[in-house]
Length: 250
Ligand code: PEP
Image (cartoon, rainbow, N blue to C red; front, side, top):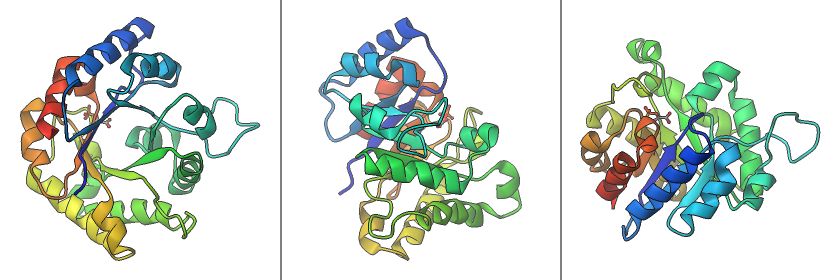
């Protein structure tokens, strides 16, 4: 049995007061929910304050980590620094990082390895653009993003305690969600791809859907057998909406 995970990606939103209020409201709203793990991923500068606000009610995640352990990497934040703050998850390879900052599989794999080394749980994002879907390249793109990271990791550790988020780029922040059938088909494909390497890993790995998930469509998506939770962008910025999604997964 895989415990569902609902993770909120706050992206680059909110000043200190916003982060404090949102964290407090989410922690209060999810109190008493069982059978679901919940995480919020604020910007780096709010991690400490959010960690303090949420207590044990939920986990805190970051939105990236450095590809090296320490030293001359101006502007980066190391996995050890995150672990030191009590951070549990780290989103890696988000399509916005791939698109706006040119992150490729090699860099994402190096970040992933650093995260595992410090005991963080990476949430590895994969997903195709609309152009790629229309060209019937969805599976090959996702397989290549997945293998492009796995093949660079230490084979004795592999993906470790990570999580994979399937996020079709055309559904992120657009209000256009993949249908439950489209999402399930890709989650099943990802699980098969993992199973070809390690059946046990494929069985225990949590696969999240991300892309305009909200309270109104969460039930349908989460009912699919290979969808083990959600990575939520826009809807994670409103406590009531995010809590409603968490309640659907509980
Ligand atoms: C995301 O950016 O990870 C995401 C899923 O965003 P949204 O829910 O806003 O589509």
